[in-house]
Amino acid sequence: MSTNSAVSADTEEILPLTGLRFIAALYVFIFHIQLRWPLAPESAFLTNLLGQGAIGMSLFFILSGFVLAKRYHSGKDSFKDYIVNRFARIYPVYVVAALLTVPWMGVDFNAESAYGSVRHLLTAAMLVLAELLVIQAWFPQLFHMWNNGGSWSISVEVCCYLLLPLILARVVVLGDAGLRRLALAAYALALLPGMVLVLLGGDYLVFYSLPIYRLPEFTMGVCTLEILRRGLLSRRLALLLHIPALALLTVYLGLAGNRLPGWITHNWIVLPVIALTIYAVTQGGVLAKLLGNRLLVWCGHISYSFYSFQMLLLLVLKSHHAAIVAYLPLLRDNRMLLLAAFAVLMALSAFGYHCIEEPCRKWIRRRGKSHWGLGRPTALAARAAESAQ
Image 1 (cartoon, rainbow, N blue to C red):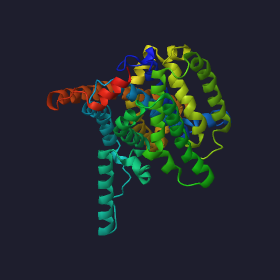
Image 2 (cartoon, helix red, strand yellow; image 1 turned 120 degrees about the vertical axis):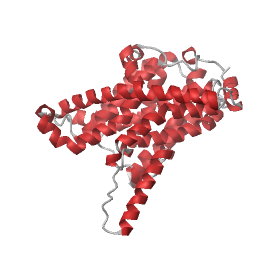
Image 3 (spheres, helix red, strand yellow; image 1 turned 90 degrees about the vertical axis):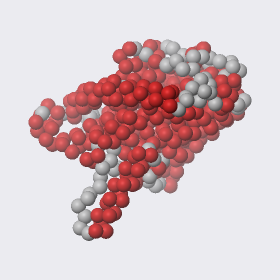
Image 4 (cartoon, rainbow, N blue to C red; image 1 turned 45 degrees about the vertical axis):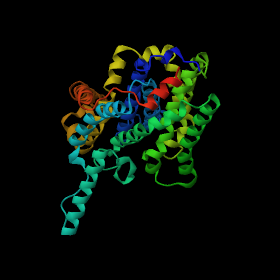
């Protein structure tokens, strides 16, 4: 089994992918602004394109599968290391974002009866429990409550994190033909929710946010990493195709983005283009150089805080939009509102990353090493490392 040099150092960060993560977060943020305050009403093409920013979530899930499989494939982390590292990475900022958005929990405690009061208290307790356990994505009814319109994806990620060792254990022992079949099966399963939505209708939030429907995208990321490791796709071909593929996707979304219900209905073209782009960016080329510049990589580092805190900003804007534009008339122009919101969010994200995310992550990992005996590879990790040879 051959190993591609681009991913030979399993724990080494691939800087262009870090930059790409910020592009995805930015696209999602612009999409959220566009939903509430249209940015280009004079252009149907731009309206369609900006209105499909939810596909950035697919990029997150595929990229997450790719990057985590790369990290865990090395065999240097035990399962306990892996879980503690993931917890340290996501939970501190996740909790802060939840606390800051408590005023928008969505529970009205002004009940007219004792029964109503008890019901509202139980609803609040259920919301808090779901938030603490990061299981809110399993209940689409919660999507529009609290900050779950953004944090649902963290819930999906947690599910994928827990399943990664099982997926990776299967992937690394597959032959090349079996790996291709698994990648195609994951792609086909990722298309089914959109097909059902188009043909039979239903609540798009069920298909959009439920972890079981997003797991195939994460699995595609794991398969993409393994295909790269084995050199099953030509580097030259990937570099040749990914820019035209991105251009084709842009034109498709701009012309036909609003013709299908929901956003997962575009998976048939979105997912292969994302997987191809991730593959190609690891191989170098012009796009890799652009995404790997120092500023964009730093933006990629703060992108988790950028994504996590954007719901706070959106909720504040939605609640106080009239007062804000009355005080700052320049922000009546939605594009100026976008720029101002972006600047505020970048400042908040930089603070979140440097003052919350990184200090908490380091503290939790230190505690893990000193109190939980982290650092011993498991049999699964060792088997993955052996398969990579």
